[in-house]
Amino acid sequence: MQTRSKNRKEQIVSVALDLLQVHGFENFSYLDIANRLSITKASIHHHFPKKENLGVALCQSIKQWHEKEFGKILANRSTAKTKLDTYVNGMLRFSCGKNKICPLSSLQVDIASLPPAMQKELRLLDEHELGFIRDILVMGLKGGEFSFAGDVNSQAVLVVLACKGALQYSRVHGDEIFEQTMNQIYVLLGSDISRNVA
Amino acid sequence: MQTRSKNRKEQIVSVALDLLQVHGFENFSYLDIANRLSITKASIHHHFPKKENLGVALCQSIKQWHEKEFGKILANRSTAKTKLDTYVNGMLRFSCGKNKICPLSSLQVDIASLPPAMQKELRLLDEHELGFIRDILVMGLKGGEFSFAGDVNSQAVLVVLACKGALQYSRVHGDEIFEQTMNQIYVLLGSDISRNVA
DNA sequence: TTGCTAACTTACCTAAGGGTAAGTTAAGTT
DNA sequence: AACTTAACTTACCCTTAGGTAAGTTAGCAA
Image 1 (cartoon, rainbow over the protein chains, first blue to last red):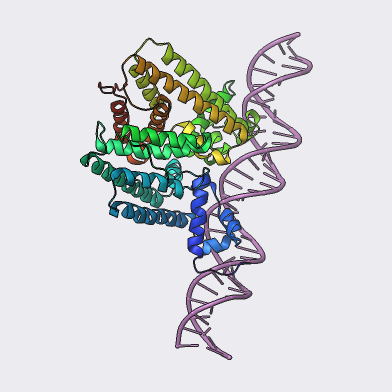
Image 2: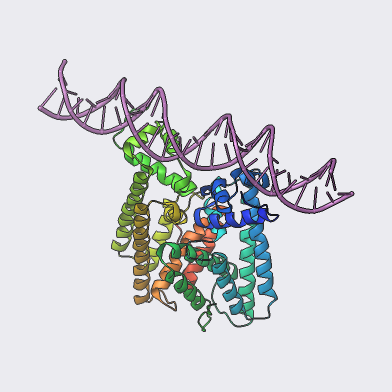
């Protein structure tokens, strides 16, 4: 047995997030989490009676991370390009290592099997992220940093899609594909300077 | 009981493909397939002893579809833009309805849990598709139809990523997002004419 | 018509998954 | 020191999943 901890809930969510990004929500079990934390399955049920509860907590944890990070990025008095860089590098950090994908992508794929409460949370998370990127693009356009044709909204969608897709692909085909894709995005945004890598 | 059929194998693969696009490979069971075909689970084991066998058959079926469709598109004496249109509309047809995503995306997400044989097949399938799109872009550039900055290869990756990501997103957020994204892709490719919808 | 083959079913096995109930034990409060 | 709370464990339950074995039946060919 392991000593009791008061932040067990957070530990569980943290491990669950990792498993979500590697295997998907329906493809990890309470036992997987329990083993990693050296506690029993029932202990996790104590904190999260149903898996749906854990799933919602997972979404809320992501939301908090988003709010914190996005807030920080927008508060910084930096160029739009730097903001976008921070997002891209932050995504990489959040999905640390080449074996993980974006947790939202992971949930999207399983959407048909997810409990409604999680579906709703996921929709909000996606919209929040999309809005954040759109704001950066608008800022970049106004400041003359970016110059691209077409609708800003659609471009924002495209940028987010590309980041997440690149993450997914690079897990299967290697890291270079991520760097390549990010560079191409910057080219298309009309930013001449090459991307800053953290 | 149902009358015996000689193309049961194809029927099974067909149903499995549908389930793959809705729930993912690890999230459908032999029982799901059996119920849809009104046969027993064991009958499917007769055709595909292990689920891995079914998975490989699934990949091969997708490969055949790719080879047939890509071949047709390249053989047609049409513009690069028309070829791309056919691919996009074809993807929509292959993933008929708003409740399905690209089967390759679905497999990518589950990559960590897939048997090695399937991982290998998936890699080949991705590369094949990427090469096909790259060829179209090269053709479009040479013919003056397209005009975009940056590397052709990276742009090809971006286009494929965007199509698949858009499908994934539109299942969660509605169809409009797919149309929007496709239009934006065409804008970025430097093609002025709006997309033809089938 | 006999007989082989392949499609299929019934009946099972084992493991793993989510979940529950009841008891144990650590730690803080008064 | 007594009491309470919450973290945790042991020991279950039920269902589903992948998989197997052995028998049944349809259909085709010699």
